[in-house]
Amino acid sequence: MLKENAITAIPLFRGLSQKQLDELVRTFPRQRHGPGEVIFTEGEEANGFYILLAGMVKVYKLSPEGKEQILHIIGPGEPFAEVALFSETVFPACAEAIQESEIMFFSRKGFQRLVQDDPSIVMNMLAILSQRLKYFTRLVEDLSLKEVPQRLATYLLFLAENEGSSDVSLRISKGQLASLLGTIPETLSRIMSKMSAQGLFEMRGRRITILNRRALGDLAAGQKLVL
Amino acid sequence: MLKENAITAIPLFRGLSQKQLDELVRTFPRQRHGPGEVIFTEGEEANGFYILLAGMVKVYKLSPEGKEQILHIIGPGEPFAEVALFSETVFPACAEAIQESEIMFFSRKGFQRLVQDDPSIVMNMLAILSQRLKYFTRLVEDLSLKEVPQRLATYLLFLAENEGSSDVSLRISKGQLASLLGTIPETLSRIMSKMSAQGLFEMRGRRITILNRRALGDLAAGQKLVL
DNA sequence: CGTTCTGTTGAATACCTTCAATTCGCGTGG
DNA sequence: CCACGCGAATTGAAGGTATTCAACAGAACG
Image (cartoon, rainbow over all chains, first blue to last red; front, side, top):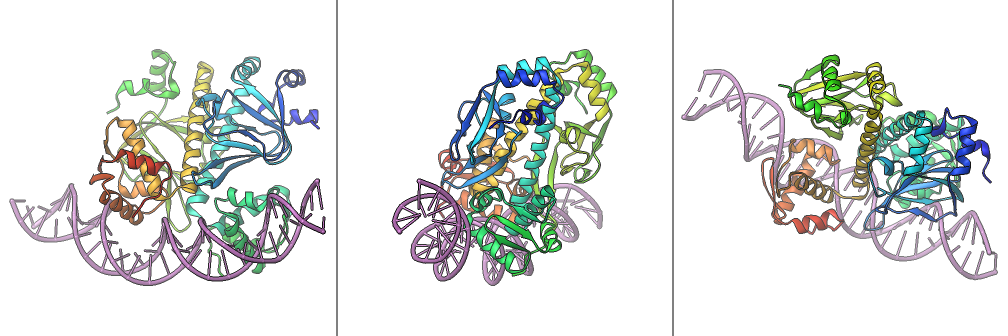
């Protein structure tokens, strides 16, 4: 299931030699998790971080009443829980596989060994943390300053940008999308109905075809949704 | 105005020798900003980062309609806009002095020079970015999963913890506090009235005396505010 | 073909915001 | 020393957006 070239595509290891990568693959332990399996929970003691090799993982927070806010959808090649390495001894959020996933674990010691081998990893890590900070900056902005239609428009345009097509696939369930956008399935459902009724896009299950990119852009820029 | 020992207290430079610190003070430029002065705005080209030596700075986002969300209140010794160094060429947010402030500027090149001098700075930077990520994690949680009374309770308890006293000073205006908590002055005002009417705390301008720590804790943990 | 999970829809409600009007606090100048 | 003026803070009434709770439809899966 694991393609070896998956390793070479991991941003954190950019710049490492093939020999170093081979060493890596042999040295560090991997685990598999089926969809719905919890990888760690908030407050649990953290002794290292993970890299997702294949599959999909969500990192999320739970409120006391059970509402979920997804902080991040992790895709192949991305590290997660890196924060645990540098400033924390416990995980600040939960993580759960949402597809059959394969992950690699790096203990504190193991990472230190890596860094001694090749200090460029530290710089890569800085770049990754910076990107994450920028991402959170946008998440906070969305949650605090935008309404749900605006957030959805932003997200759809982001997907379209990524795939280079106006026909995109939410790669997650609508329930999960609601949680990622900081709302609940009912609200998202209503808003998607409204928006598709207005011809902004067409919706067939998880496939979305953007019909009016212009109007979506206006929404993303803060325009109100006329109902 | 600048105390030299302020430099030695900067976390980013922990571990540097006095000689290195002196060098630093001589080498890098400083600027002063009066309250209300904008230091940089979102989207502006970014060529380095800052460390606040004295005063207070807010880092914030603006919505198209002009609503403000404060991402961070920066205090003396803290760096800001570090993200610009590693993954971005433009600032992802705005910064403005909210008190008379003195800041030090580190260009990309200057920072590289520092790192060559003493690589431990990179590890310090990792720790700082990690802390910031954890902070944002909590901010997102607050905005998405908690209501305003809960956010306020959390914040007050945080202040009390920090000062080691149940008599605390919001060091910012209530308007700014509202923006930090992701709401508006009117809403915050109403909620503070209600909470003080219930004996949770006493309020004299910017001074708050916590009267019922227990009830505040319950709120912070997710309990509803009974009106 | 039934069970289960996901998604949709409706009605009632809660929370927060908006807009407008006052009041308060405080520094300044007469 | 007092009065003025300005920004910050407060209060009220109305409105809007999102949530809650409940019921139902639909798709996926065994």
